[in-house]
Length: 286
Image 1 (cartoon, one colour):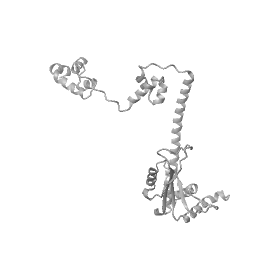
Image 2: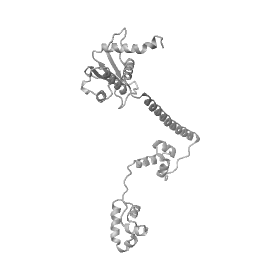
Image 3: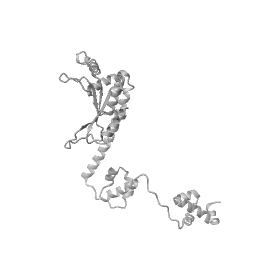
Image 4: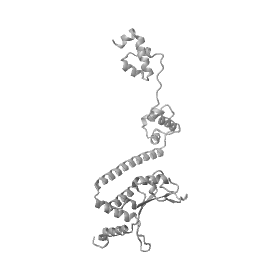
């Protein structure tokens, strides 16, 4: 039995189905397709008196974008300018603001500046993509590190960043300080490769007093695989309000100082290893 015939023989029953679907939030088109009612006059009679369902707010945040687009349009911004501000398509902007008055036409200089800005933003995206491709390709060139690779890397790393003995200031101790987590991770792996016992390694945080020292200490402790309670007393650096520091924000975690106790002998070996690496280059043989 088709819908048209049912409409006349069991109108109230069909109307009950239509109203039930309508109250579930279905649109007229959805009801039409669900019950195969293709006569608009009949459909109108079936939904007569039933208010349309309330439309739920879009979950994708376009309602906020629409309101912002309208606000910017009322301030006199063009489609191009709104697109730069909000990052949405001009077709959407046109739909949202088409009932609002058009802004005054931009002068040639403003159009040129806007075009230049858009070209530069595109150029920055292209440059960043090329930059990331170069880094990724270079990373694959390294391949797995052997123990000897790690040994040589560690020696060079210590000589670049670790404490060194001076003729005028005898300091034969093994102390390393750095703010880069990857550098610290490599250095700790190097100490493990050398067979340095974990109970000989001492940790201390050095950080500006205006930063979250406790959070930073927990971060370094997790990286080192130790409990934060083993850390020595934190060294707080005085904050100079006249200095514009750039190392701020949630990613600023100060510097980690890693010291090997009774490390004089290890330091002498490190100095010797570095001499062995550099000797061919400093003796004129290369």
